[in-house]
Amino acid sequence: MAKNKRKNRYKKHLVHLFILPAALIYGVFQLYPLISAALNSFYSFNGFERVDFIGFQNFITLFTEKPYKDFFLNAFSHNWIYFFVTVITQLIISLILALIIHSKIKGKEFFKSMFFLPKLLSVIVIGFLFSLILNPTRGALNTLLEAIGLEAFTRPWLGDMSTALLSVIFVDSWASIGFSMLIFLAGLQAIDKEIFEAARIDGANSFTVLFKITLPMIGPALMIMTVLTFIGSFETFEYVFAMQGSSGGPYYSTDVLTTFFYRLAFGTVDGGQAIGLGSAVAVVLFIIIGMATSLILFVFKRKDFER
Image 1 (tube, rainbow, N blue to C red):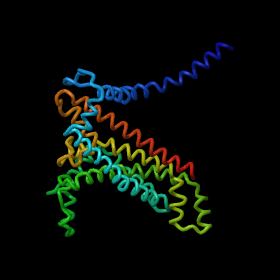
Image 2: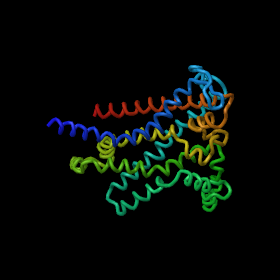
Image 3: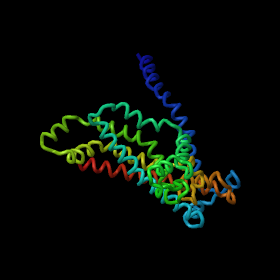
Image 4: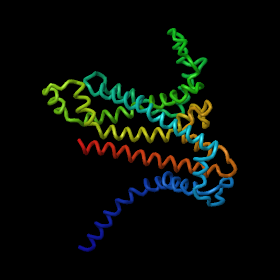
């Protein structure tokens, strides 16, 4: 009897071994770099080696000394622009698409596949293709505008400081809109149809149903996508790097915190402190994302509680 109990206990704990591969991957590629960056932010570097413990000096340099302070504030503002514009170009449009597909239209599966298809493409491929499309001299967009008599709207989209960041955001949103749409569609499909039928019997119009029933009922999906959009906007790197390079050109108009970190940590040694300063940027970015994510979750949960 005791032997059987030990055997059952052994089998019960054996299940935990299946977590080990994922835990190892997470520890090596996520946890270790995070801890390493946090430690590096408190040291000065001689090339790629730690030299002296300098406490918070890297953070003080980042926030008070030029040009680091100017670069940081410029990149930080671009991340916020990235987030607010992405909410409009990605979340709102994807929600509208989800509402349309959720209604009784033909070819639902086809439209879901077509909208999600860009998410399967490589970021480098998408960045290269849109760099060709937005080319000022032979790009498809300017050619189309000229063909329909809108020459006044043609411009070097990625070379103009006023449109470069918005162009990159548009490309990112275009590629990600299908994923957001599927999340909202899953939330819509989880709502009991009897709720809508009862609302229509009570005389509720489409506007009332949307804002009083549909949106509150898909609150969890809205919360998830708001958090993911914020994290994605502050962690964005691939599309900026693929289309504008690590300098975030033209003249740092598309520079974000991740490209600023990349230049500091890998682009130049800068007197032996670049890795420490880059790690300080990474730590600040981690704190910003953590605090903002907690705030968003708190706001949504409080609304759910009040409802």
